[in-house]
Length: 353
Image (cartoon, rainbow, N blue to C red; front, side, top):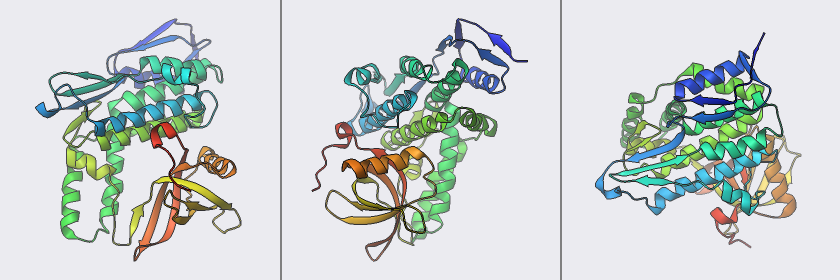
């Protein structure tokens, strides 16, 4: 018999407390008839530390690109919470202003932080209108742990390391293999995988389906932060990341078979659903270059497919993540693995015809 709690306020001082609370929610050891007030300790923030006098109390334009992607992910998470698709264009100017992240840069080195408490409260307000208080808390705990927790950063690094190690087996030169392997080896010193905690996120996705989309947005933000804030050594949510390791896990690895990434803005010329793969998309980029891509099996979310269909019908650009194979400078295969709506505020103007 689940214990019903009407506690008006819940404070989770540490990340361990938050994981325990999520476990109890999923195990139905606690439940709520109404959404309680929740607060978190100082751990619940996106925290970046970059040592060195060069970055004393400062932030560079390249670093800001990472934070811009975090902002976009917050917008998309809010859109998901209010029952929409993962796109920021549906938000009003007032909603975007209320969700605006504030990056606090402290002195000494570059100590950058974003408190996510206020953002969580706004997302919670939208979630509670679409689901019960317990389900809302499961979603909220997923957001705070995937954005602010150290455990998820460590697991993400470890997973990216394994992916990259598999990719570099096909690299052309032994020297490149050695340099990549050495960079990735430093991850083993800091990245431990807590399988039990990661299973909690998986269980949360099963119980509250939109959790998977919220987690994906946190992954997008995390990759952008690691990419743009590790030109030097950095510490993200307390996890040390060497510069070369950060570059290794976020860079596109060009392998001997001609595998490459063709991420960018495209327009849909047509969608072909008669092929054996089930879904083939004819594209053109801003330079007018045409490309035909199959929708990869890993694109499992219906939101991605809807973004493609909406872009076709409305004749607007969209941003695609594409894995491709090239031979003698010609693309022989292309697989679309993720799609999101075009955002002119952050993507810039579409220059194509």
